[in-house]
Amino acid sequence: LQNIVILISKQMKYFRIWWQVPRKYSKQEDERRVTFLELFYDLVYVVIIAELAHSLSAHINIEGFLQYAFLFLMVWWAWFNGAMYHDLHGNNDIKTRVMTFLQMMAVGTMAVFAHNAFGSGSIGFALSYGAFLLIITYLWWRTGVHEREHRPLSIPYSVTYLLAAILTIASVFVDAPLRFYIWGFNLSIIVLLPMVMMITSRNNQVIKVQFDRSATISNSMVERFGLLTIIVLGEVIVGVVQGVAGQHHFTLLNGVTGGLGMLIAIGIWWVYFDFISSHPPKKGVLAEAGWAYLHLPLYICIASVGAAVMNVINAPGDSIALNARILLSASVSISLLSISFIHKTIQIPQQYQRIHKLPGRTIFFAALLVLIPGLFEMNTILFLSITIIIILAPIFFGVRLWVKVQVNDKDFQ
Image 1 (cartoon, rainbow, N blue to C red):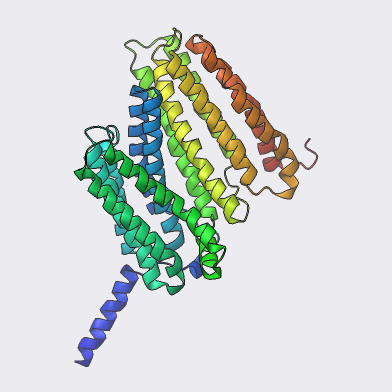
Image 2: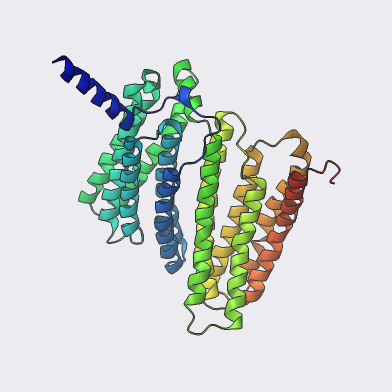
């Protein structure tokens, strides 16, 4: 009997290695790097973002964009929850892998129905999104079970997400548009929940301590946001390639137009990764929340640039249709505006603060100027060229900053 007890205790020990409790805040690693599991998790969002962008490219109008933006918010919130949970509580164990793979399967199923989520695919999308919310509910609930201090946050989060999951799944039993109103209600309560908890924490020190910890943006999360930025920029590249490949005959004009479309993606990449990437947000809940939430319009509009570019490149020698022209100009503009506002929330080393001031203003004014080409009818080459020239202004300062940091020339002016 004693040998059996020893054997069982050993097996339980091994089981705990494979299926660990959620990692506690006290075991946070300051310099933790993004793992291959997290990279694999992010990869599934490439597919669903591509589906949303392709759907927008076929329905460039106000209704199409609003539906696209709404679904993108649902998808981004799913990614943000999955990424934050792993950053706060993830382990290198079987449980973390299984839960991550289950989330990926739910998101992959969402992607199958995303292109027609407001039509015949709405039931499939609702069921898969509800399944994702159930997984997130279990994960947040489990943190409170194993960490008593975390229960003031775990309980309201678990209850709210469980309610949203149940209502999302139940929405398949009602017809449109009530089904979509339920989605909107669910999305509202889970997106507003952190704000409600922040307000509540002002009068409750226990909740405040837990909320401040959970709302902290770590260096690894800064890296995750940068990686998602690259994923979304990839949609612009996809738009260029599909636009050029869709032509019956490849010509020099097609190549030039495709090259200009690529330069827009390169320009946005250059501005973001020179001024924002690798800079954590300023300390404080408002600054960190602002930093995270401002990435949402950035991602929405970068992906919509890809949808617009696909339409623009389809007519390389002709005047651009008004809807595609407006979508492209507005998307580039809001992308740059988002970067300029994010720039206000980041930590900048003292020795580089002066050199960051003028570029921040330049990005803002470039965001306003890039709207102008969208107001006038012109051919594709001219339109894209003017857009790129405007983006070159903040890129110039980005190169200047890059040289300053890389060369570390104290006399650089």
